[in-house]
Amino acid sequence: MQKNITSLGSLNWDDLKFFLEVARTRKASSAAKRLAVDYTTVSRRISSLEGALGTLLFEKSRTNGFVLTAEGQRLMGYAESIESTLHMACEQVSGSGVALSGHVRMGCTEGFGSFFITPQLSHFVDAYPAISVDILPLPHFISLSKREADIVIALERPEHGPYVCCKLCDYRLQLYATQEYLDQHPPIRRASDLGRHRFVSYVDDLAFSNELLYLANALPNATANLRSTSVIAQFVAAQQGRALAILPCFLAAQDPKLLPVLTDEVNITRQFWMYCREDLRKLKRITLLWDYIRDVTERNQALLMGKNREMVFHD
Image 1 (tube, rainbow, N blue to C red):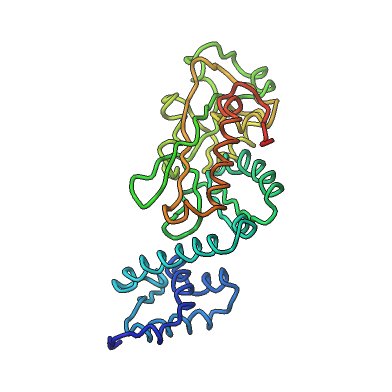
Image 2 (cartoon, helix red, strand yellow):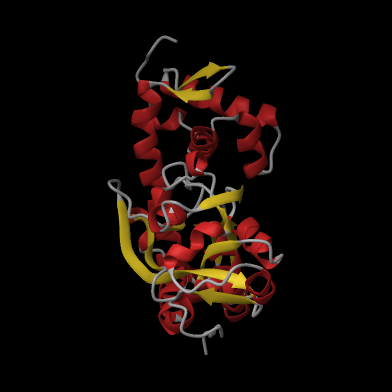
């Protein structure tokens, strides 16, 4: 495509919104769904933007979808800056009522997202009905760079990127079994007794973080006859009373039938980290949710550390 000098008058600013969605999803069909338009509208808007700028922004591939060209990558940074500035401008000029409204998408690890964050967010949206929240409790990493979420809670602190990050909390994992399992299998008095028992655990080579390889690290000689990439699946399997499982205390607390075993010898502490993009952190709805999550996790330290089974909610 031949380059020319672009005038601001020829640029449709709304096309940048379409550009950002295609860049983040790499699929015009996915961008169309997120923008609630049809595929041809997305395609037309991208062509319009490329024509106005006089450059190719995407290379189209059957296997990789829409891949940013070098020019597209440069535009991405500017477009995201414009997007963030518009969000901030709307909050500054719209008044407090509008500022405490809008949409937030939160990504989180599967177990914590499903069994702790989701119950807490149900109370949050009651308190702030003008703010809508998507919760993504998924057993894999969630990308902020692709705007898959606005806030992420993860097992590991991000190594680099334009992010604001804080340690959210410590949490504890312990070995659990049902009373039925303990009654029907050899007694467990010390860690050396565990060699005669069966476990439920992660699929080691499919774990998205080394922080999840609890069994291999805590009990190297343990045998897992049933493995899953999902901690919720492991929780459900342990409920059946056929095997032992290392589970987060906040998850095992959901079922009083699951009893901690060898609490002094099998006692693992991990951390959750919360982070978001720097350009979003000052948005009032982001700040509100960020502070809310920090508050409720602090209130629930006893649950997270396995000292009680009761969840506490915001006043």
